[in-house]
Every structure is written in C-alpha cells, then in structure tokens.
Image (cartoon, rainbow, N blue to C red; front, side, top):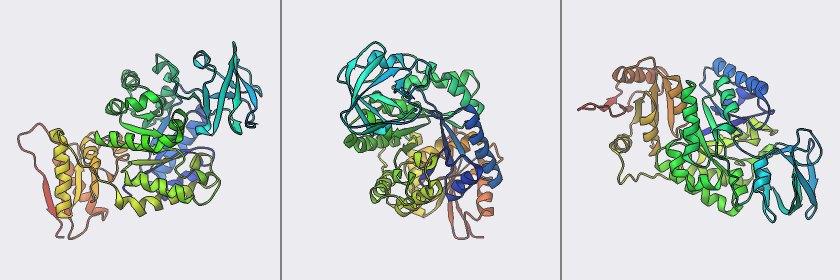
Length: 458
C-alpha cells in the first residue's frame, strides 16, 4: 500500500493479540489518545505495541495524541440524554463527581455568552445558551442529545483565548517522553508559535519527538500553511472541524488543508469517522467507502481510524476494509507536480521521479533525516520507492510518507548506504532480474552529484 493506515489504540485494541492482528492487517502507525485513560493504561498499551513490534520484526510508529487545551465535560458520571427543547444546566466543575453536566475551565465560562451555540461529540450534540449565571449556564438542547463525560465542548464560531499553549500540555508531553512516543499530536493549535514553543521545550529536554499539528480550530485553518512549515506532519481533525464549522463546509476545508500541506511537502493525515459505522457494524456503509476513496485520490499520506479501533466491536475488520479500499483506488491518485518557483532540492526530487517513471524503474534513496524521501513522496511517483537509513528516528519519519517503504541499513555514509540498500533489496526479493533501479541521495554541498541507474542482470 502506498497510503498508510493508522489505528487508535483503546479498550477494544490495547491487548497484544489484537495489536498483532492489526499489524498483520496492514497497520503500522498507532495512536494513543491522551484525552482518555491515564498514564498507567497508556504505558500498558505502549508496552504491548513495542512487544508485538519486536516479536513480529516489524517497525511501528507510536503517536501520543495530547489533550492540549481542549475543554471537555468532566461529568456526569453516567451519560445523560436530553430531548429536543429540554433545558438543563452546565456547571463549573468543583472537583466532585456528580450527575449534572460540568466543565472544568474558567476560560470557558469567561468566554461563553447568551445565544452562543455549544457543540459536543463531533457535532452530534447542539445546545443554545439561554442564560449565563455565576458558575453555571442554562442551555437548551437543539435536538435529542447525549452528554458524555470526556467529550470535548466548543463554542461555535468562537475561540477561547489562551495565551500560553505549552502550559496546558507540559505534563502530557513529559508522559509521552516516558512512553518513548515517536510523535506528539498537538491538539487545538492556533498558530506556528504553539508548535515552536513545544519544539523548544523538547529541545531543552533532549527529545526529538516528531510534532503533528492537528488542524481543528478556526485560527489553525487560517494559518495552516505557516503551521505546516514548522511541523513534521499535519492532521485534519474532521470531528472537531465539524464542531467549529458547519458540517457541509468540512469536505471543502479538508480538500484545502490537504492541498496546502501536500504542496509544501509535509505528510498529511485524515482522521475521524472514516468508517464510523464499523464501531457497531462488521461492514462499512457505501458512503464511507466513497469518502475513503476520495481521500486516497487526494493523495493523503495516512488514513487514521479512531473510534473504529479504539472502542469498536470490529477493529481488525475495520483495518481490513480500509486496506481493501486503499488497494482498490490508490492507482487513481491525483498527481500534482507544479513547482513553478521551487527550490533546487524540489526540482531534483521531481526529476528523479520523472526519470524513474520514464525508465519504469524503482527508486532507492539513502537518507539521514528523511528529507529527500519526503520531497520525492510529495510528487506521488507511480513506481516503488525504497528509502534506507541507519537512524531509527528517520525510519519512523519515513513510515508516515505516501508510497515510501523504509529499509534499515547500518551504513552511515551515503555511497555505502546505497550499496547496502541495493544488496538488501536483492536479499529480500524486493527487486528481481530485469528490474531497473534509480539510486540516489539528497543533494550535498558538492560540485558533482551522482545518480546511479542500475540494471539488474543477475
């Protein structure tokens, strides 16, 4: 598969047996949602993933998805359902569990006003604010809805100002470091400053975890290009976008974000309700298949399952279906190769791709940081791409890239790395007699750069 699959680990999938089945079904990227559970549970799931990865001899990526500055219901303990038109209070959480909906955020109560529309549960719950009192607000259900503890809550068309992004996620960042996560999912970012602040904090603490910016706020949509430039990857969080924007606008926003991020050469992930019906059903709906098909055609790097694998009844079947749809339609990916004023490294990358396609050749890359592979992946080559590195962190970066298959090598030098890559491709039967290989690495500060064209005669 050229399009990669990511799964969310949860109660339905955190055990070793299910993780093993998910890996065998084609998933290599696993997400733990820090908005639910606790450190001990996350440690257990991360440990199970690393054990399965080691036992199967397969590299897997772990994403720690931080809660960030999201506002969530802290009660009721048990879900409460309200009829359309019914009124109820949302109170400021006082540290005690109760049966009345509560929120633990002073910023929320400062920002909310009469006639605001509140949205929860990926847009399923709509409430209008009728009256604001000291430590509570009276709201009216706009349709039948269920309030659940832990579900996020937003004020439609209004962002709650929080000046220090880092202060809201320092503890969870340190938890992710303890889990040896490969990536952090940064929730509710609004500007490049949020990502830069986290990266500087990680640098001070000696960590080089990758950063995935989740686009789910009004400001993040407006600043997506600048945010993508300082991030390692971008995630289109469709559930939260559907809470901030009218649902009919989400497909247009997704297309805009995917196009913008792809154009600057960063991997893009699409998540939420890809196969949502498979939380309770063993097969997806027809409309879900069409949705996934369109994501594949748009050249999305990673498709991420959330509730389907975290709490669903059919986690492995969901991955199997996602793989089937990807394999059926990834030949239809829409290729964008416009680089009117691209840098030399981008023109080099597109040149390698077009040379390989002209010769019907496979591409082999040696990379130390993954940048050359990322640039080549951006142009969606129709041929196979193998990228070799001796750095485990780089291997993780490569696993997020469309159409790139990572290969471990021991060599630390470019030319020797290419020789080792060629040998490994032969040993693993990834190339065969009659194949042509284009072998290269990133442009170095040298007067001459060599691209090898290898014809496999024996």
